[in-house]
Image (cartoon, rainbow, N blue to C red; front, side, top):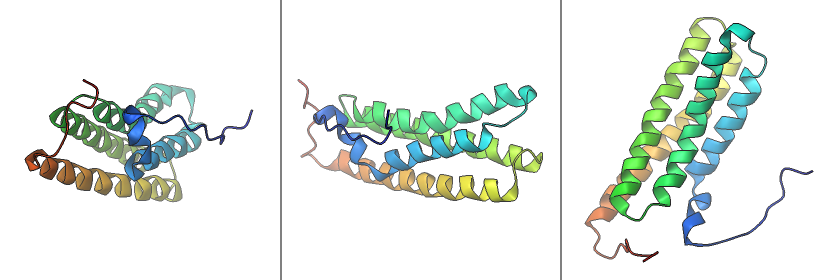
Length: 141
């Protein structure tokens, strides 16, 4: 089964898939899984936590987008940003403990840095939209 099949099912609740930050967060999850897949057994719990942090970023972006109001969306973006900070701490620990190479760390950190900055910009945009009275919180009502 080919994994890159694009199935286009569109509705108002799936608009987050257009966001660069969400797509990049998915890529970070995939890259993290690839790099940490060969970790020794004694690190499996720590590796699983790091992978969960990576996936939590995209999950919270999607969940916030799918909530009813802009303030809830903003709250979930902040949760995603928190997961991003936790992820960064994880990869620094792996690197400083010589559990990933400098090259692996750089790949992860470069993509993470991009996502972190995209999240910060999206949060600023959403905060500005709260002031905009044209925002419709009742799309699904």
